Structure formats: structure tokens, C-alpha cells
Image (cartoon, rainbow, N blue to C red; front, side, top):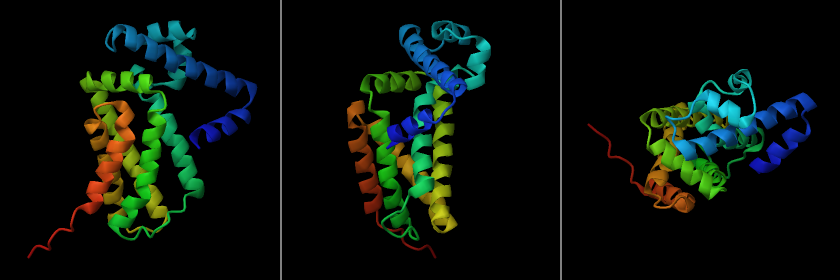
Length: 210
């Protein structure tokens, strides 16, 4: 689905827009290759721009810094899924309860996992790169909060109560994060994330406090 949306969007672009999209793709691929070859700290924006055959101005037209490039593919996948969700998402169950809202988000998160691991070699490089750098782990945490807020927004659009939408959005991202940590191989990401959702949904409700 994400690929279909991206393909349809690309077909509707002007020549200038297609050139800009091509330049962005070259920057992402150049950065990925350079980080794999030299490590994150040894690569500069100038290095990435040179490998991508673009100027620094073009680089900064698309990305604020080299850290942002690390998460470009992940963000593109989420944006495509988010577009689909906002346009046509029709959860099969009520999202009025926490369990219902979390079940509704599960297939969206699993789709994100499946898209992220389409290129397993690239995903492995991404995981190793992020795990090795505190700065990247911090940026990833910010990205995850953005995703949680987007899940909350979508649930609110489908009339979920604010508390349910907020908690479900946070829990959905927590299941994804747990699946990522527990996956001994990136190919297992979908399975471990699905298991995290299963365990979260199986948790008994808390006893009321007095």
C-alpha cells in the first residue's frame, strides 16, 4: 500500500519536483553507504552531498542535518501509512475502549514493521547505527513520540476518548519499541512486535485504588 501511494504521488509530480525527489533519494542512499563505510561520526554533510552529487544547499533543502537523514526512510514509510489512515482507515471494532483502540492500531504498526524490514540489509545497518550512537537514540525517541501523537490524532478523529487515544497511542509505540529490542534478527520484527501487542492486550485491568 505504501509503495502504491508513493508511486501514484510520484506520477503526478512536475519535472522539477521529480528532480528534487531524485536528489533526495540520492542523498539518502549516499548517506546510508557512507555511514556503513566510515561510521556516523566520520561522515560530514559535505561528504554526503559530494557522494550524492548535489550541493550543500540542496542537502539542506531536504534535511536539517545528517542525523535527520538516518530516519528518512522510516519517516517516509510512516507518512505513507499515515496518509492512508487519515484518508480511508475504518477500524473493524470500536475504539471507545483501550483494548479496542490498541487492537485497531496493531495492524498499522505491523504494517510499519513490515515496510521497514522490506530491505533487511538496510534495516540491519540502520539498527546498528542507531544503537551505537546516543544522539541517534535520542532522535529516535523523538520520532517515536511523533508517531504516538499521530496515532492519538487518528483515534480522536474516530471518536475515541482523549485518555483512551493518548494511552493507546503510547502503548502502540511501546509495543513497536519492545518488538525491536526483542527481535534477535531484524527479520523477526513483525513477529516480536505482534507478540508484544498480544501480551499487552492480555494484561488484566488494574484493581481500583481506594
